[in-house]
Length: 326
Ligand code: 8YV
Figure 1 (cartoon, rainbow, N blue to C red):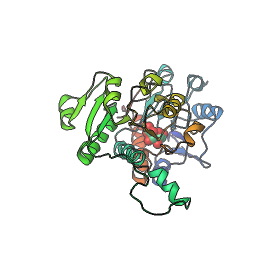
Figure 2 (figure 1 turned 180 degrees about the vertical axis):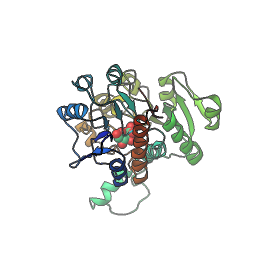
Figure 3 (figure 1 turned 135 degrees about the horizontal axis):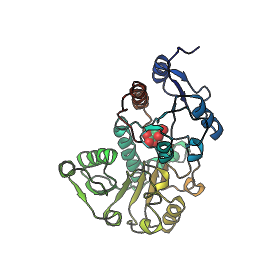
Figure 4 (figure 1 turned 90 degrees about the vertical axis):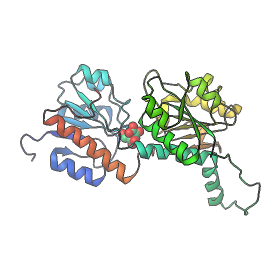
């Protein structure tokens, strides 16, 4: 029996144990037992039957989902900073508040981008496959040579929180020169601290960079931002890194560009149709593929849950949640 007055909260996926315990303490929490993404029908049931939903990137909450009657849910406390899987305009139109979990995952996602950069430059995935397959015959001066990272030029598409954290690591850790394009750049003192150089267009960054790392939000404007034309602007020796959202890259165009040698390699944490990965990418040795691990540490996944909880608590106390995005 739920205590009277306790809001009912449907949580779509398993969350770290301390977060689930806190959710059960504070709310009438309906936790996921089998950790499967909810079907569209189950999402609609949740919106009809609960006061709040804690969705993740694996739940597509569309205008159709939000058109349910009667609609009981008043807040979608998303577990994650990106919320392109939620039709925010439709939520707004139905008076449903949407929150996300920024900041707590900035460092981990930046670490993930730098890890991918190093992996693809130094052929880490390929090297590991080589050792595990038993093919390694021993050290030799010309074996599996990669690309030097220190002192190279990093081009950032987007200089928000995560882009800046990547810039800090790259500049202070690897002595990299950092270029960026951002239609909404941070204040000049922040840019100066990072020794980052602005460029007027995405293409300007692509032409100069040895490594291009994507840090834009997924919006209709950034969909396929890295299309065939832009991929063709990259240097044939350059690498593309994506820890943002899959649909920022036209995956078919990326395969074609890699085949043509228009860039040297790619390292991806996110995909256009997750968890589906364009099969051609699986066959390419110069491509590093990770399963959307940006924020995947114990510490951060707990912090994300606590942040979603804070948003719920504020909302049900009648305050504006700090991470309200709509
Ligand atoms: C999350 C992410 O794991 O926060 C984001 O936007 O991409 C990841 O850190 C995922 O979104 C959880 O919903």
